[in-house]
Each structure stands twice: as C-alpha cells, then as structure tokens.
Image 1: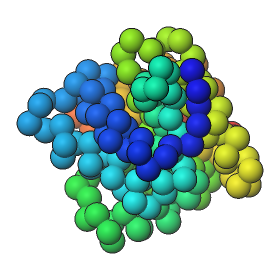
Image 2 (image 1 turned 90 degrees about the horizontal axis):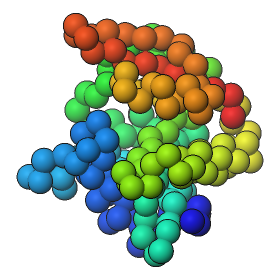
Image 3 (image 1 turned 30 degrees about the vertical axis):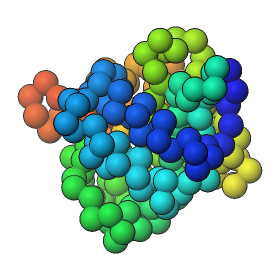
Length: 179
C-alpha cells in the first residue's frame, strides 16, 4: 500500500469512495451518490487540494483523508464559495466552534473502503496528515463524528472535548488530539 498526496486524477475515486462509505460506513443511495460526494469532497478539492492524502493498493484508491490546517479560514471560504447546508458541526454552538477552531485549528474527514478496514490504512493516512500539519506548524486537530466512529478516533489518540445530543439517541462528538 502506498500513501501519498492526492493527485488531480484521484478525485473521481475519492468521490466514489466517499459515496461508498457515506452512510455510516455503507454506500449512500444510488440517486444521491454524485451530490453526496460533491458536498463532502468538493470543497476540499477546490479550496485545499494539497491537504488530501490517498491510500493506493493495486493502482486503486482504497482510502482517503482530506482536511484543512485552518478550519476557520476554510469554513469562511466554504460558506462563500459553496453555500453549504448545515451539517453535524452546526449542532455545536457557534461560540464552541470558534473556540474549537482556534485551539485545534486543523480538521479532517477520512474514509476507507470496507475490505481495507482494520489493516492500518486509516493510521497510515492519519500519520501522513499529522506529518504535513507538523511541517506547517499546526499543533492540534479535531474531528466531529457520530457515536459509531468515536471509538475509532479514541484509538487514534483523540479525546472528547464536547458531546452533544441534538436528538434523543443521537450523540455527536467533537474530539481533539495534538499533532
């Protein structure tokens, strides 16, 4: 397996993988795939393409990590360029998000194809992202996830900073870790 910075030719595969894993690790509905992939990967492709890493095995993208070293700047640009709809981050109060972005400025999203999970792909992608953040002088990062993914992120060294329950039985975690 090779971990490298994403190339322009990788974005179609990144979008496919995003749609293959977007429903809590399972594929999103066929009629929603293109819009879903564009919503979640398009801003990174356009605004922060150099902060995306891919895991390639046998010539195929089997995992990706995309993110930004500067969440506040990214969110401002994303709002201006993409006019995004609210997502899980919006269930956290704005004052908390601003504090999170100031203290833990980098954020990330990661997806790994089901047959390649539990083989170190995510750890390798995270290591590449952390190395790039260290080189850029960024000291801390965060991820926002649901309950099902929180245990993975804890194993990857993240700790809960805040947990919100916007609906009965739905828990969202804002998790952080030093770079």
